[in-house]
Image 1 (cartoon, helix red, strand yellow):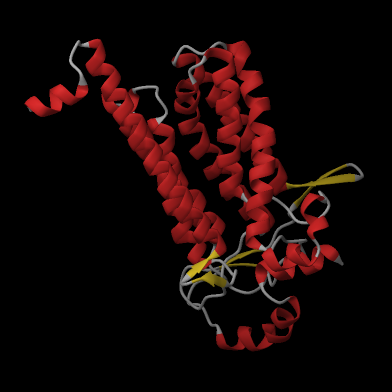
Image 2 (cartoon, one colour):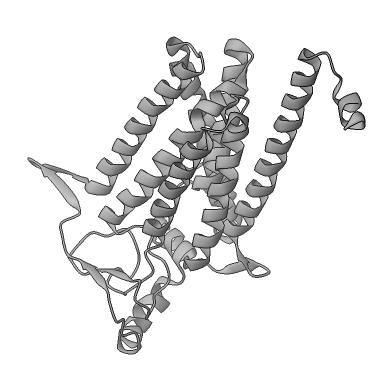
Length: 309
């Protein structure tokens, strides 16, 4: 019962969805709908696991391998990688939980004890990434005093895990956006179980859009890393990637079924705006500090150099 109420909080009223489904189907006549009709469960003997879960696990594994490779490329010790990864976990959980509470303030405000109940609700992705970055950086700083190098190593794996993980959600019918009568629509007509309410309603594939856009960002980041300014392992690449991904989330979240809560923004979009601003500010600070350090190495104070320019 608790889970049903929480799902209604995120996706809109469950009863309203069910009551209006017939009317919606009658009025929405998409010109092109991709209809999925398959078993979302991988059956292993008497047990079963969701294909979506398999895809997300694969995304995490691939990202960890990539993280290890990029960490070694910037001179980080492989045996320190495990400590950094373990350090990421608590920050990701706490940040993700805070984000989820911000998405559903009324639900958790009615009973604050639900906030610390792991059986209720889930985690929000954006603040989960931010929280994991904070605690992972702290562990990196304790290990070698150079957290910027760890952040640099995490830039590409971040976009990689997001792109694969979001596309994996297609396998479970999770993350469907608003119903639509446009050409870009997907629906799930099989028995499921599917991860979205009203899975048979032709809807914007929000999860796929974010996955594809994140993969495009990954390709752009790899190109940008060929430039000396972005290749410096001081964390600016991570903050740039985080800000760019935040923009993607900001746009894609406009297709979600969540209610508007702050002006024209949904709660997720408000979180994205704050993360984008913080990431850009941190990237600017890192760039200024890095330039100052180069000037000092060259024997020219940064202020004098700018004054003579």
